[in-house]
Image 1 (cartoon, rainbow, N blue to C red):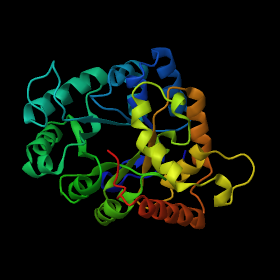
Image 2 (tube, helix red, strand yellow):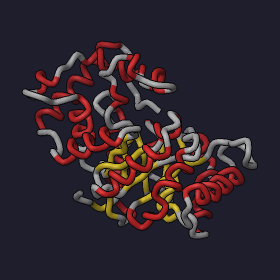
Image 3 (cartoon, rainbow, N blue to C red):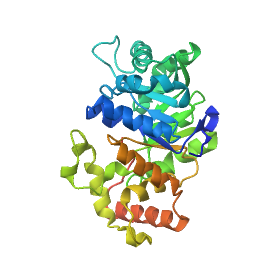
Image 4 (tube, helix red, strand yellow):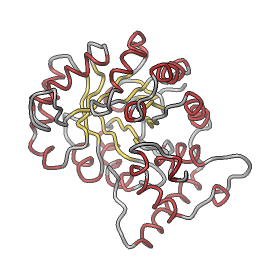
Length: 308
């Protein structure tokens, strides 16, 4: 798979990455985790994203692919309080302890990137949380640091000199960060990870979602319904699905370096690989999706911010 420079980190990154939230939240069988992640690595994908809060995903990844550690860029996220760790949320003590625990769980001596996991703007401005990651970098535990989140907080974080990576929501139903966050990341050449690039499969019926994802996907389902689009409206004919259109839309924007998709199926992982291989959407299709989003947002009489 083709790689590109991951912004100011200087790392080389593939446009498709693996997001490990679902394997944790849905308690995916370890053998299936190994099948999914090894399939992606074998296909050339070199980016894996997880978080301390993803209920067992760090441990599952450590068991599945730590023996292939030199083949991928590894990202985790931190900041929340945990019962088994000292310190309050966003404190130096809990962040330091979380970094150390993530290294143990993932069976590695360093993380390529550690992100603050969606703290609010005030926490960022206070500086203690970010400072803890700066110290972890100085100790050699992480190589780069950054922020995962949306809207004003993500735009603020992207402008901080210590921040090299931003993870933010970008998809056909979540376009606000294209206008608020990406101008800042492009100006500073910050590495950008697009989360939720297929809009939580908002076109699927609610009964198709499992566990926490029924509620998690609902805002996107409402936005998608309001947009009232079909693939044919965008000029597609024959067999094409919304997952492919959505993923290619996300990767069509300059300054987006990788899009992470969580899946609990190796077959779905292959479908994502096939979609990325088709490249970005045509500019006129991107513009149609942008215009439709803005029209639906105006019609709703509510602002559609980035969904955290």
